[in-house]
Length: 127
Image (cartoon, rainbow, N blue to C red; front, side):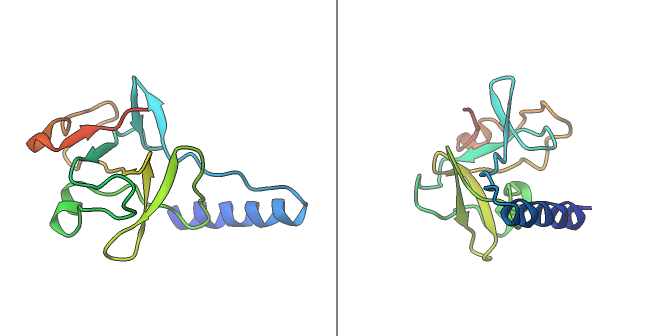
């Protein structure tokens, strides 16, 4: 399903460019109840050990299994308060105001915030 969505976005972007339209930057997160959420409605988090503006993520390997990164899909571009960081494995991840964004594997449904304050280094991402 993700490949189809990405392909559709690329076709749309190419069509708009060919027609002389500009492609706007992507907003990878939404605001819900005062926090940032992914397109799936799940809460997004920041990690205190990520150096703001460093362009990298400090959560890799087993850490990223528990805290899956909000990945940039092909064709998406940064804008406004969102930027892109490069992970150790070469994949691209969204950052909000310089802080990489993550999901928490133990959140079960939209609105869950069970990762907030985890190990005193994980925080709900807020606009």
